[in-house]
Image 1 (cartoon, helix red, strand yellow):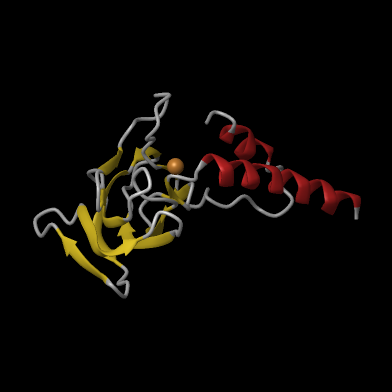
Image 2 (cartoon, helix red, strand yellow; image 1 turned 90 degrees about the vertical axis):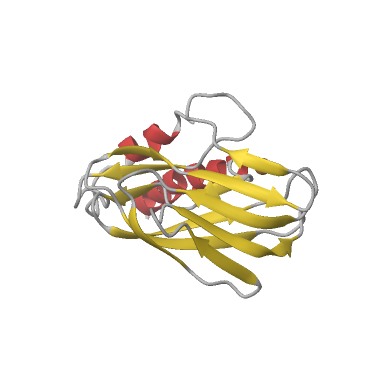
Length: 171
Ligand SMILES: [Cu+2]
């Protein structure tokens, strides 16, 4: 019972911290296995300075292949035909005081490492470019996905989960 409480608390604190720190446009998944077909969920937490969102464009880095967008009622999907690395949903509008999620299925690169997934948010008035690289103390951080070697994404039950959580403190 005591052990369960400790684990529960340890997991809850980082989740709450992420919840408040990532009210912008954020990526739900933090880590994923190299070379896997991965669902990526982009959460749009608000509009552009109060204006409703009308388009979300995800700019995938090289090595992200075969991206497929999940359809959403009220939104039209546009893939840049050549690379399939620029995917847009256009529609809405999504009011500033509501949130929504946009899903992609994509094959990840085979190499491990941090990847920056830039997102452009178009609104009725203005736009926001979520393109700032990690380490930049700006207002519009780009979502980051940490790609880990295949098979390493999930720690076995009972393994200490502290290293993963400690890593989050870098934000
Ligand atoms: Cu925000």
